Image 1 (cartoon, rainbow, N blue to C red):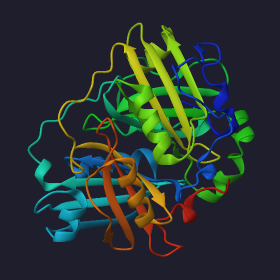
Image 2 (image 1 turned 180 degrees about the vertical axis):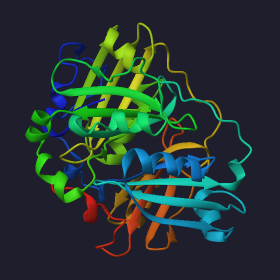
Image 3 (image 1 turned 90 degrees about the vertical axis):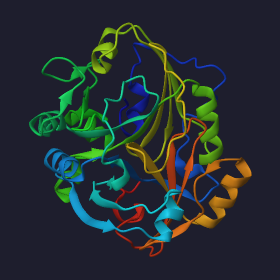
Length: 357
């Protein structure tokens, strides 16, 4: 949960204290300050069991553009990229105004049982869809058949500052957040003039994690991203937060990295009550659920840097169509990738679809 642009500092002012252990913050830090070649969040990935069903749901709810859908048959490059064997999959790429949303169905997941992601995780628990209040994304997701985690028939107004919040589930139990912004917030954030150009009054905002050790995970990402988080907070026993998340008497530590000048964030939650448990086992790049991708300017350089940081690498960079990509795990085992587009003006690059800072 957050607000956009410089309004992020407003969130939870009446319900948080800014004490989360030894985490150091820099209130002005954004990904533009990094000395790495990381450019920002290229896409949110979602591995699904039934691509037809998931795609129909998200297309109806978001009205994002379907820019590509293709089947990939078993080949050595895909196996090397995902760290699997004889992998076959189908991927659909949706284009939001500010990033891509990639839905992938791996054949090996066809017989797996589905389950709902709890708000307290663990793992990459959700992404977030923001919209103007006047064209409510909440209403669109409900109309598309979303199951609501937030009880009641309306999203929650936390503090009267112009944003309402709700959590829901897609047809496979993947959790997502819906934030609705009123005109005043949109105008102050610089978004109001862009709607007519976008012709898509909804956008994506965040990579959100629930972790058993927020300091450890945020330290990892500080090293990977090359910037400090810009905010941290502690949220304790707030009935409105409980209503949004469907929890009772929750107590949460939180932190954020700013991934552009508008709404993109990396968000971290450690639920002390109910406790976020550690993930057991090892996630695969093809597993059901969320992943995300950082776009980089030099993937070979970043690959070497991740090796020097001791990151758990799934693959070396592989060329896939118009870009290079590689997969890795963070210290909690969450899956992420690096992507470098080959053509600077590619439709798959941040440069082509992210709002200017």
